[in-house]
Image 1 (cartoon, rainbow, N blue to C red):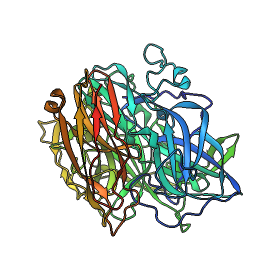
Image 2: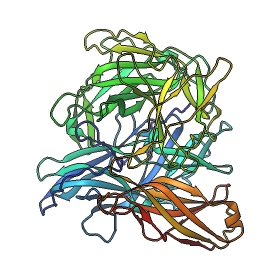
Image 3: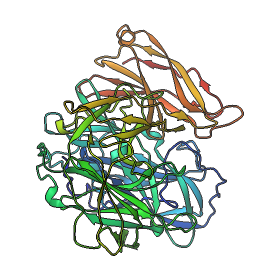
Image 4: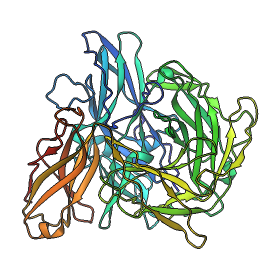
Length: 593
């Protein structure tokens, strides 16, 4: 159980606000935003860019070291430090902040008062100092007080409870960090009022555990969302704190209490087929929570209504339907303050918690066609649409859910073996909950899978609760499908293996916008024999000569690992350009250590 300390990594660091263009923006989904960008003029406008975060039920702390941000009017522009069309702001010195603390409406305005030429920008890139770079002074200044006080070991670092029940640290690897982490959207900068936006790094979705040998590591799978604070409010509430576990972060929770509670604000997806998580937060030890910022109206000015889902370990999932956020943000001294948020309960009565049994689940085979995707576990109230209950990213090197290095109570991906408890929202009266058996059945779920870019969800598969004498169940996800007019691209090349020293494994990694798309193992026989390996990776989103896909460019590198805490990245030169072809050859790399 993770009990996050409310101490910022750096007191002077501000939150990065989520910019939600009309209802919560999607990040680097791979789909072009389309339209013609307005070229910036000589007039300047102000931008306040805040960072915020969603919850995590696994990590105590997630430190990142931020150094720069850059804006461009073309949503598919390839990053180049030499390209003067990028509007880049570099911090005087990098700043290290703890994303795990930016929850329950907290934000960090590390990029406050940015001065940009007027215009409409279509992408933002965030640049972090790599975990393999020399330790920044801001990282050195942080004492990790949950173990022996010492500076951080890496610029980007995760703290968690390991399989032995001990607080441990591991590097957070960002794929090809020199290209930055991309956020696509529409960001209009004018000479008038400042643009106040917040960018959401949702830890539960973007920080992915993986292991090589005995070493636990983490990578980032960015899929950022953004919110315009001028059109944002919030929703607040509280659960019955007497039903929450009170053990420390390294102690196994008792069986008669709930823990790792997460609250989702969900809205109907663009295709109208399901409710998807727009914004999430954790529940504090005292039972209170605030989901903010949340878009109040859509592009047409219509009020947005959310269904609130409260889920947690060892508890029945709660659902409150038809809730509209409220409130306004005030801006003063680089601080964003929300007042007037919607209260879920008109009375002082907290949301009820019912303790239930759980079961663990895992894929029976690797996600395909690409390894680095995600799974959404849904339940459907009678007469309604499926609602997101849980979300799991797959290990980009195995294609499976990987929590084996976590504390033993977090090693499985646990599901509540129960139905739903549902109440319609009432602004003036008490909430009245009723037990609802999901369409899937009590304790059952629908599971859909997707890849990182240019794919649609595969069709749903049923996850059925196990027999009474079992505590876990396996399932096979249906493969995601490429979006229309997107081709299945292939990249091929040769890895020439000289000596690789003490390293014991090697993988070819394909990345895009700071996230691993897929990977391929190099068989041990090749690198042991100091030979060559011909690789071919397919299923990557690509365009064609007749239908270009402007964002379909990728980067590749070789990752070497010794299984004991040391790894090395060997980049391939150039990039994989699949924008107007479905095949790229000659992506070669030579290894000689």
